[in-house]
Amino acid sequence: MVRMTFPALACTVAALSVSVLAELKSKSCSEVRKAYISKGFNQNDAPYHEINGDHLKVCPQGFTCCTLAMEEKYSQQTKHDFKNAVTEPCSLMQTTFASRYKKFDEFFKELLENAEKSLNDMFVRTYGRLYMQNSKLFKDLFIELKRYYVGGNVNLEDMLNDFWARLLERMFQLVNPQYSFTDEYLYCVSKYTDDLKPFGDVPRKLKVQITRAFVAARTFAHGLAVARDVINKVSAVNPTPQCHQALLKMMYCPYCRGLVTVKPCNNYCLNVMRGCLANLGDLDTEWNNFIDATLMVAERLEGPFNIESVMDPIDVKISDAIMNMQENSMQVSQKVFHGCGPPKTLSQSRSSRSVSEGGFSARFRPYNPEERPTTAAGTSLDRLVTDVKEKLKTAKKFWSSLPGSICMDMQIAGDVDEDKCWNGNATSRYPFPVTANGLANQAHNPDVKVDITKPDMVIRAQIMNLRVMTYKMKSAYNGIDVDLNINESSGEESGSGCDVDDPLCSPAPRLNDNGKTQKSNETSVQNSATNSGLSHIALIASIILAMQRQWR
Image (cartoon, rainbow, N blue to C red):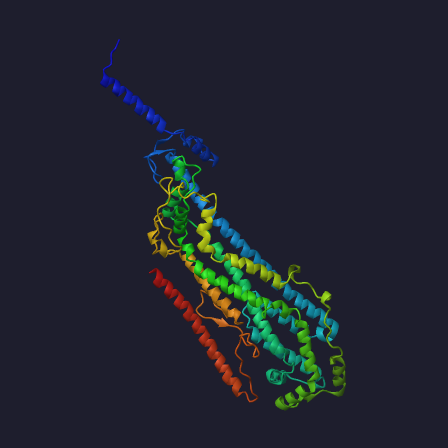
């Protein structure tokens, strides 16, 4: 029988104790295996018990349930999860703007179609062949209005002035069928449109109403499309290597410790997301300014710039103008004959035939409300605007709240106990303060290394787009149309939309009979347009210089 000395027995017991402790310390990785396999990964990658983690590149080393293959697979999954987490809320917001833009665009286009159809039907009923012979004039009016709305290079004031001048030429011939008029004579007649006011006050009022309404409608629809496109261009986020590592450490490294159900601490998640979304955070200021400006235009569309209230009765207004011309035709004709000279008289037979063909016999009778065509989708502008205003208000601060929204997602962090959450190294309270949003604020982010000297130029371009669109919205709020693009060095204004009786606008100078005031005013308008163009150039230049200095 072998006798063991006390020291030998003590060594044996110690060895057995180490062996037992090692076995106890090597915990089961069954939950980790289960979670790993559930994501479609190869089960052969996952150990049954903890192993030494010296091979890990990102996750904490020591005893671990992750092999190198698992860490690499989790790294790939991290990128996928992050992109989904960013894309989902961005897609929802983009869909909101895209669907509202589509509704507004359909509404405006159908409104124009209905207005044109209504005018054509009513004028055929009222004036018959007389209208049919001159219908191209009215058709051209709606062609130009549609072309303006879809982004054509149309100056609304010039176009409307031309419409009334051409209508005066046609009307003047119809009320004076006994005379023959040359093109030169008719051109002279058209120059008296503003001074004689043959159509009463209708052209002036309608020009103000159409200009303001169309500027607001087109700018509003354009703004919705710009917001949709901005989201589309910036939401394709590719994490930097530093961001990728931080995400892996936050989202899947706790799995390697066997902490499958433990979520990241909320502040920890915020710091990681704000670091990864640093450039997106810089969108927030201009985005909020854009939202505010768009809400201002929405209020105009509900009130004085309501395009529905302008286009629906446009046939009645034009007919009233025609009747004004008919009733005042003698006085108008005498003033024109005095200013342009006496026209040539037609032969008696031709004159009699012309009077028979050209006389007006019926006053315009509008449709009853039930006869009027319905607007787009059977809805009204007020309901569309109310809906989009609600969506705009919820869209404010979208970019600054995006990191928090992602962290609140139960798939990422969710509602956690701040004393029993993953802080990047262990299950404990997260010790660092939360950094603010935006690239410049990430210089001291404790979890993501961010190079604040290299802004994302795609996002910088979208910041510029939002800034320009905000400028357009604010101009549209005042009835001013501004054609200002990032890649252009000049701006063009189309129509002030100001009514001399409107307290929102300054009175426009009036023309006198000798033409001197007109000439000085034309010079003033040219100078104003030049100054406006220069101011737009200065705006773009200052924006670009400021951005260069900020990121140099």
